[in-house]
Image (cartoon, rainbow, N blue to C red; front, top):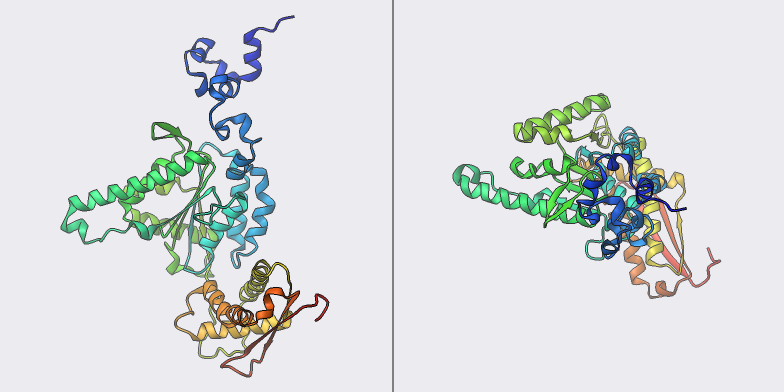
Length: 417
C-alpha cells in the first residue's frame, strides 16, 4: 500500500504550516522551512547546530546551547555561593525554570545593587551552569558574551561642544555592540548576554538593546538571527543608594525602575518596559554604630555564611593547584566564626573596605589567609611532590593588630596528620 506525499508531510509538518497550503510551501526554499531542511539533501551540509533534529543530538551543539532541563541542579549548585539574596535568588530560579513556557521573547533581567553584592558573580554563575565548554580566549563559557559599559564611554561635554561628532561616536558604539551581540547569537541563539556597568554608556548607545529585547529576528550579514531564545542581563547600581533593609522587595524593584527610567528617559522608554525582571541585590549589613564595634562583636549572619563559602572556594582552588595532594584545612566552625569576626571588624574600621560589601570581605580573606597560604607553599620545595598539604589556622581575638595566624606544612605520607 502506497503512502501519499501529502500524508508524509502531515506527519512531518505541523498543522499551522500546512495551513498555508502546499503551494506556498513548495514555492519557498526548503532549506528555509524548519521541518523540511533537516530531510532535504541539499540542506544537509549546513551547520548541524542550526537543524532542529540534529541540534539536540550533536555534542558540540549541546555544549554551546544545553537543554533547559539541565539547568536546575547545576544552577542550584552555582548560586549557593551568592550570599544575602535569598528572595532575589528565588525569583531568578523561577524565571529561569519558566523560560521554556515564555519563549516568544528573550528573558531579560536587570540586576541592580551596590558594588560587591554579587551581581556580576550571579550572572557568571548562571553562564557556568548553562554552558559546560569554556572559550580558550575569554575563559568564559562559549555561550556567554560579557560586555562592560566602560568600554563605550563618550565625554559628556562633547554632546554640547560638538553634537555631530558625538552622534557619530554614539552610532559607532551602537554598531559595535550590535555586531558583537548578533555574531554571538548567530553562533548560539540561546546565549547569555551580560552587559555590566550599564549605567555608564549614554542612553543613545543603550538604544541598541531595544532591537534585541523585542524578540523579533534581526538581520546580520545577510542572515536572519533569532533573539527570542537568548538571556540578557543588564547590571547597574540604579536606585541602590536608597536601598534599605526596611524596604520590601517590591519597593526596591519600583525604586530601581523609577531611577532607571529617570536616567534613560523617553529615549529608552520601550527598552525599560521590555525588561521582564528587576533583581535587587542587598548590601552587607553595617553595624548600628561604628564607634561601639569591637573585634568581639557579632557580625551579621550573612558574613559568617560568606566566609564559610570562601573557605570552601579556597580549598577547591588548592585542590586544583595541587591535584596529587590531599588538602586538609584545620579550622572548625568555631575557628571560622572567629575569622569572620576579625575580618568584619577590619572591614568596618577601614574607609577602603567598609562599603565594598561582600567583595570587601573577599579581599580581606585573600590578604589575611589565601595570600599567606600561597606564599608559604611557594617557598616550600617539597610541596610539588607532597602527598598531603595541611593548613592550620588559629585566631587570637585579643590581638587586634594581627589576630589570624596561618601555618602550612606538607608531608610525603597521605596518612600523616
